[in-house]
Length: 151
Image 1 (cartoon, rainbow, N blue to C red):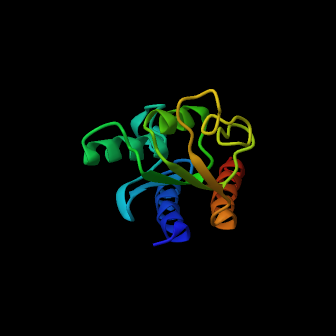
Image 2: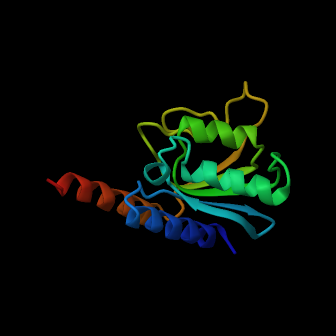
Image 3: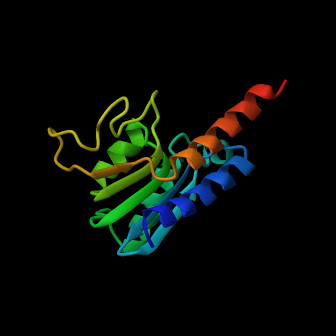
């Protein structure tokens, strides 16, 4: 499978989030071509502010690998990670980050901040952006337009 294929899986997760009334962000954690974890935002359902798609995928990936060091993994996410999630990716030693659309307000992989490639931090990720960007953006725009249209 290629980056586009794994991003399609992340988009499936994002659609599930939208169906549940969550901000439609999906994440997939992969190692050696195998999907370790799939997740989507769950903050509304759980009431837990940490339940971003990336965080949930990292927790499941660590459980599956038997430890917190997720070296050699790639995180696919439909929206550029926020500072919390970007920091967690660094802490977990994820090797690559592939995301669909930039988050100009809170993106921490180069848009607003750059936690994943900061030269003063002990670990840096390879970053690939813009994979299935139009599909990711369309899903987010549609979700928020629907929210604004509600009385």
